[in-house]
Length: 265
Image (cartoon, rainbow, N blue to C red; front, side):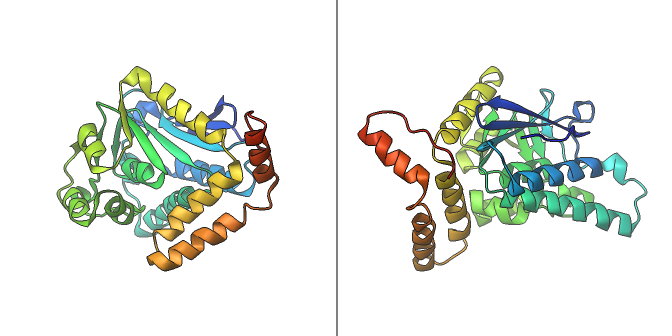
């Protein structure tokens, strides 16, 4: 599919059906500014409306030091309360659109992820990180608090008590701790990060696209329900796949001892 040339993002096809999205402000540690918020919101909205042949998204940052250092604080100098509110509304829409994206999103954490950068990682479906990465939610040191899902997504990843410690102290923690606590799925050497992430993205993209979307929806919304209701939600998601062309193709390919050719229909 055709995507615009964004001012703050770079988009490219990294593998069949895999879109690589790179935050592209390395000169200021990929800090999130208003334009980046607008670019992200436009991207996620387009992919939600029509993803074309894209089946998986990988999110990473330009440069070797940071995925995202957080919000661009220099841009916020002198902002009025109303200007701040309007900017944050843009950021909120970006993060919510990312969380609601039907496609799976893998974070390739190539450097430090602080504040809004860490919240972006938490908004992805899962993450791989370099061993030198550090993570933190530093908002309370600035007189604010996480406002892009951090107080909700972090407890779901690491548990309530650990999350309160991380957020209230604002202390950075290591990639090893992130792995131990369940924030990231795998640690990699820098040269191995993108090959490992793309290998996983290719595996996802090779599976039935409608199945992947239903899995993501079932896990996300089911986690917010009591268990019996979630079981029923899962079955409803399952039933939507029974009469798809891809389900027939999957069974046929299995019996013919060949790889299935899924079309997302």
